[in-house]
Length: 187
Image (tube, rainbow, N blue to C red; front, side, top):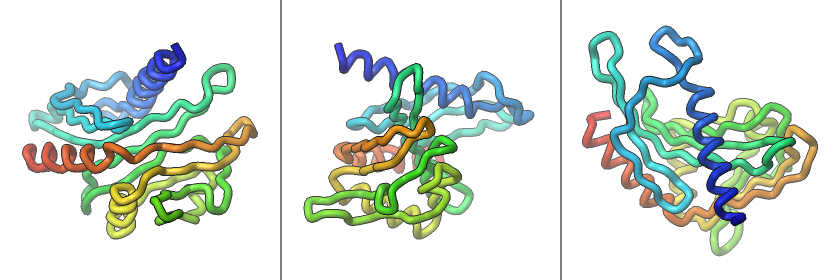
């Protein structure tokens, strides 16, 4: 039953995250008109592609995502992760809630021999903007493929201590699928 509730919470959070960031062609926050063309689960990671018409031109996008609802109502809290094709290569974005405060080493990737990657970016550690691109994204994604778990230790926006572990099993397959689907679509 616990797994069912956890899965249901993840589905609801994914829908909320998708609709919260969905925009129409005028930039208004509204229900999305993207149509899903690919959807594949790898461990906890989802590789997905969708498309829509924009001014008579087909727009396509692919991404890898994970949404973690780590605290249900009444103190709802979640964080999410996206890998997308940016203008200058792959970008990695973490959605963190304002008021989140990470421990100095609380945003890290662990391997079999200990920590193999961590960030001390102020935006990431304080729940502000946390986006990686260029070489930083490449380094992070490689560490995720080499590591065993992504660890997050922090105080959430409600002041509660949190210690999350995202297993990295399946992430390499999700990235391979994302790359193949992006190449297939020329994006």
